[in-house]
Image 1: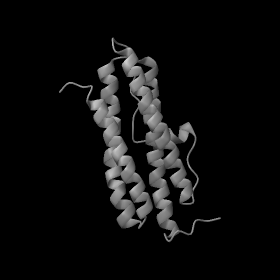
Image 2 (image 1 turned 135 degrees about the vertical axis):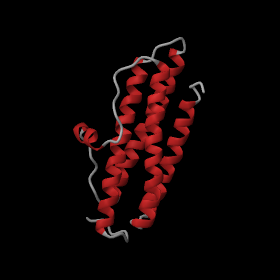
Image 3 (image 1 turned 45 degrees about the horizontal axis):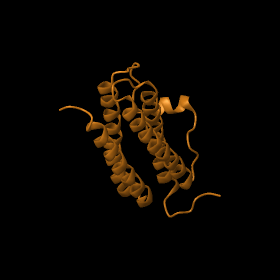
Length: 157
């Protein structure tokens, strides 16, 4: 049954398409964080191994919520890796075991997502009249800001 939530179909389609890009970005960031969890090295290995695990667990929740939001507004979620890689705004750098480089890469990805979310908040509310999804991505913005802050705390000025 089609969603009848007071938003025109063309607006819901546009919102779903933007959420698909967000879903792809979250999936790529999740995979990168998990990779760093597996391959971190250093005298604080145990701490960073657990830190990365906490971050990718939070990203897994975000991924599920984004996919479910797409379904809530009446569309199917992207679910193939090939599609995520076509849609993402993020890049996959070469492998690195250098902890500061890993952290810098993750901070940059979170900040890319944060900038995108800031744009989506107003676009969803003003252009597409979807206050529910605007509120949803506002919550995601706060989560990514906190995750980026925690990562930046490991970097020297």
